Image (cartoon, protein in one colour):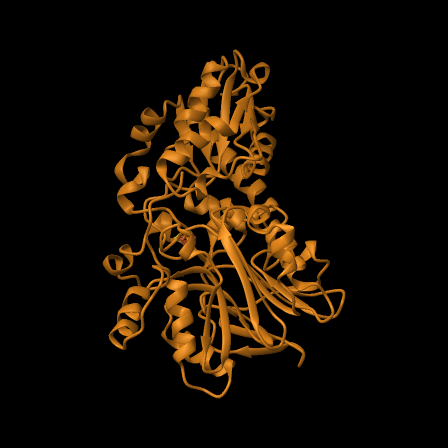
Length: 470
Ligand code: SF4
């Protein structure tokens, strides 16, 4: 998700490049809306950024203000009508909105609006938010946004486009990320990750704080603390474990370094646990540490460093096949594993391998990866996961499906080991995970612990969820 105000610049093209840097956050659909001070023009469609935005399409998008979005489904199906941004005409002028996160009370808000005669063209909570903004009273968009924020419960980082302003909005819990920076030309840009801002040459980058609304327009940057931030905050720890690019830094914490420390903590726990029990006369339980690329590479480096087991590449990933985690259906996901990875046979043949992966959600990919290693001649495959078992679903913007879909909800660690065909299986503890982020609080860990930072009516939110993830 990205928002840009840049006078005298081709903002549509800048947004395109920003979205390119954020492609890993969603591969189902992409959209860009651009305003020129009078009207908003928009294009969106199903596919990767480069597929949706051809040169011919880009020519039609001109203006100084823009927002863009890459989508993977959290609520709503992955169909074209759920692609973002959402745009409508209102009595205050045109309005477009893109959303990262998930409202936990969207069904309730949707029903309220429907009872008032409002119709919907999609099943997305983003459309609910757009309609609420359009109907709210207030002299300015800032006031209307603030009024809506008081009713929204859940995770929302938003970019909102009007005919002459871009607004950046972050929920008071700070669940999903959003950061802002200054463009070399004098304008500003906001994005889900700093990598997109760096791509655009931004400086003076900082996080949009929980509860803030920031306006980017000709009248310079305006910062409003619309709602008090909730303490402690509840930034999604899974962004660090899996979702974000490793060059990302939030609140001074760099994702690559966190992942390296996750691997180090995991190695300490494994070596003192099962590793100790099954170690050979040299004190080692494996001959080589290999990562499941890409997000587990820093963790495997950290694991190797602490355990003393040499690191090597075992899998070669086809980078042109999308991330299995964010593909929308089980059948696509299963096909994706075989399409995506090849093994460097020489690096694993006759070896005891410890495979490092960032998470096991449904358990669909771990088994096939182990099979690939064993078919390539690995003697043993031990699996070490850089987070605790995922036992609870996410209601705040990461599509983990329903609780009954989560393998760690249905099975013990030993049963999972057997199911995936590993010689041993180890998960990082919650304590180890928190040591790696070097904080004692400030993170949501609800998918591991069940302690949701936002009260969740499990039954009402369930209707909005789609099946997905690995
Ligand atoms: S439940 Fe898990 S994935 Fe969802 S916001 Fe919390 S930490 Fe992130």
